[in-house]
Length: 164
Image (cartoon, rainbow, N blue to C red; front, side):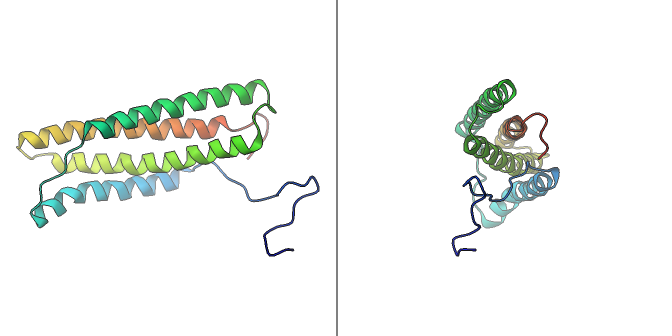
């Protein structure tokens, strides 16, 4: 064995490791961490005497754009993989699988963060808090869209009849 890693297989390709689809446990853990972080954002702002951050429209629009891009990529990937199993190069499939995995994890974290910030705004009589609550709710929907379409992209990378 060389110091550069595992020896290539008989066909000359690197055997490497395996990349598996994202299971529910990391999504739940990151969602809970995001929930705690989003909720504590208001508490920390009040204790330090700073103004509470607003949820900007740009972040919400970017979540929608990311959802559309991931969903489109998932549809295209699914079509190519289902139609002709060899049409999608392996490295492209792995790249898309890793993209889906990363986006699903970030989406779960954001989903929890927006949900936690929305919960922190409940019961606050300030009109600005109502605006933050509604925008956080929209952020939850956008992050949910990112998470779901990222998981669909992961699923689209599966070759029918082969188990991973």
